[in-house]
Image (cartoon, rainbow, N blue to C red; front, top):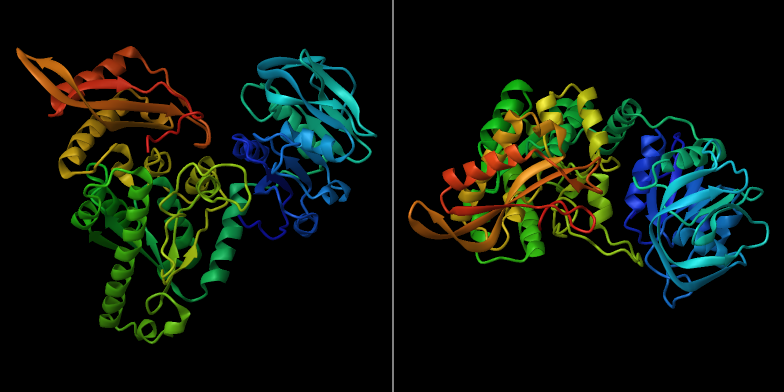
Length: 541
């Protein structure tokens, strides 16, 4: 994952050692209106110095610092005179390399605990004498490096909060970034503002201005095509590009046969008629469904859909070029082939978000596992003739929504629930067929209509139906049935990085279940998914 060049913004750089919470740290910093960025743990001190961050955070991780092959750090980082905060594994790494001692004590401290603040610390300023914290570790620091002192303890750990204020080095054995540490955001506030001296200069207004400038610089006078799905990400990307380059943008809407009910109609009406964006509609549903025949593996589905999407796009841009020639736009036809693209269509825009990048890109040497590939960051063929424009690649989902509102998009678009790039294909476990798509679409339409009618749709992050490859016995009237099972997935989240299932009223669950079983032919059972992320993902595939 490439880090960005230095900018005028304050910046906190987070080194990722494989923690499931690394992305949450980044989000918490941005909530403080300070830009944060995640980099691989093996970035050099020289590279960090060139980026000039105000502070560095070392994430947690699943390894033990003394294990063979455990991710290590360029120890020169501690001599850059840049404040460093080590969290869990990050603390142990700091102690290990600076002359302290880390051992496996035989007692694992996991779950809630109470931090007792024993010495005044700038990191813990204003937090009183004790606070609830969340622990997740098996190793423990048993001796501090020279120059360090204890700032707080827990029942199971004598060095739960430590610091060397002279060198601006700080360490926490617990996780301040998670919701289970209720006052953790105040700790991060102290680090970011008081210790790192950051300014509150990460706003969506400033982002829009900078993004438009970057787009114009990258694109020049070339034409850009964008895959418009009608979802939040692509819609905001379209609005941002249109603000930056106007009629140089053409949106292509591909019906891959995996869309929600009436999706193609809604997208064409909203963007073609209301926003007057140049929009080309391509119905490739039969092509995609033929490709997915007999395919059951989730990753294979995603990559097939991603690759086919690019092929359809390339063909659509060729058709656009012919249309432009017919309309007398000879500049496009005369564009140099060496510039890439198809004639004047050199750039392909995508609504890639920061969580997409984090979850999909396997950083060289990174101990974290790839969770899943996303259609817009994984599986792109090398022969693709477009250069990518990804103007919201730095943003989390809630930041994208803020940008959309500032650009004047309607609430119905901006607060629309996220929909996966591969569409309903990853909500059908097993083979995707026209019959199974029809069942899922009908069930999903009922879920959405009932959530909206009960005023719950905008209160949750996502609410949708999943078709399981499970049939069970039921009874309808006096007849025995052996039909399909629908799972309901309704979750709340801030940015999709973590999520919890929503405790919606039983009456609403009952209405959804009754309607699906009564109205959707081929379904006789509805179940409710009560798992959180982690350990589960939001989507089932």
